[in-house]
Length: 314
Image (cartoon, rainbow, N blue to C red; front, side, top):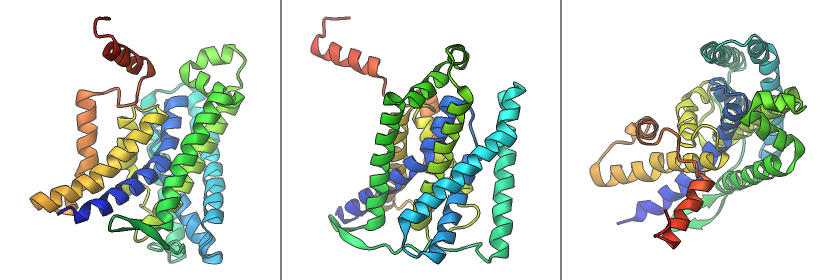
């Protein structure tokens, strides 16, 4: 009766891992510069097309494709910051202007990609990475790209935890995220911190674009735009600024679109075409019942366990 379960769980973990990699950059952007950057999804698109370009010369070389995508998208993020966002921040414009600017940047990048892809006949193409079966999870086949996506989640999460807690620039980034003005007064090089943040955010979105491009049947100029809702669902579930919450949010969205959707289809006949409703439903539920997101709070968690251990303590 549950033959479908193993495959859907594997796919949920795989997709959740991809969502974490492509969403964590937006979490950093919201934490450090408080910008809901709608152009973030276009970094994913550029990363996917970088993967196509690299693997057209070096087929099946996923590492080189990911490194190239990281570098290209990191540079793109820095350019966008210098040309668009930093001047707007310096003019102290409202958040509404910044959001509109991010929409404009997204549209510009998307149509540049459209134009280039049309000229190169790449409006629908594939990243030349061979997916090899390596084992089984129940009756589901585990492939190399499954392993890469899960490894990336562990690696990126561990790197950011170490970077933000044990390096000078990482601690400075946390300080800027906590209080920008106070960070300036303490002598932190805010410009450097923000540039590093854009490098990480853009670069990881590019790497996620390569992995997501291998996952999808074909890469198109709207691959990032079509993933925008899932990306924002993840960060809203995360409480907008929590890395740990982003991991939780990514897997919640991944499981809702795969395991939950498969269960609804299997037992109630709900068509898979309704899967895009899941992120909308999650956003509405979270905003209604837990607007602060599901990011774990160390203090509240500690208080909870103290209460469990000693019920008489208030």
